[in-house]
Image (cartoon, rainbow, N blue to C red; front, side, top):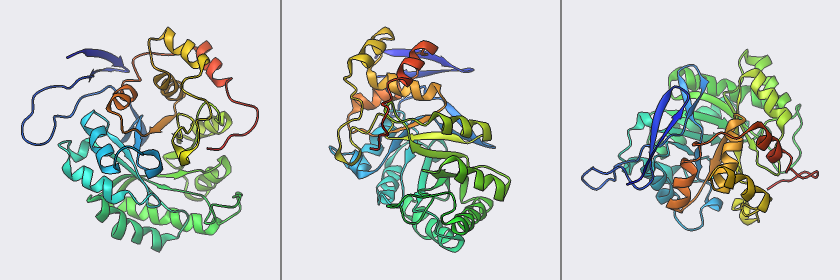
Length: 319
């Protein structure tokens, strides 16, 4: 067994690359890894690397097996959504794991601004039963507008967004969810929440990777205390079956990664997390999962962060 001790922040944590041994029965002994947490709401901390469960991102294993493996290897943050249709798969994985519920962070998403009554019904009658849980750690409003195929402006669906957020506030008051966030919101739509509710969403999950990163949005989110989370965090090599926007085999990435004795995937994750962004990833490969979870053993220099920032193409990229 090879063990690497890593110190992040105030607490030394350990990553076991080839198992932590021990354990009996049918359930594997979960590994311990060094993924740090970020505080998103009073008494709510979120692991800074999530496992995404969109079926398009997992071609070589079932969602249930992917989640089970992630938990066995030490991952503790699972990201699902009503639109993915994978909440039942996540629920079965949670039921089969030896990891205590209190140690697992579950994010799900409601389809969009659907109003107070609908969002309460969606969480109480669909999400919680499918996940097999008494509470959900974080619920995101998946899109800011009902029509996701058309451009969404700050004025679209304002009343429905407000009514939906009120429903999530009620669920948080009931203890059914611990934190409220959004997804694919621009800065004005986030500010709309601050104006109406005197609080800002805990998280805003958006497209963020080497080929497309809105650092002005990141700056605005930091100013209001909203944590930015990245879907397509590696540039979309599996998103919707398209090719990666910047390949992990890019020679420029390899040159930087070699200086840290890291993989190019670890390099990208570290670039994001040093900027305060929480990546969402997905893999069926245990080797890749172990590498992803071990991406916190080094710190990039400012010069290398700037070099990676500069790889973004001049034209807008959507994956």
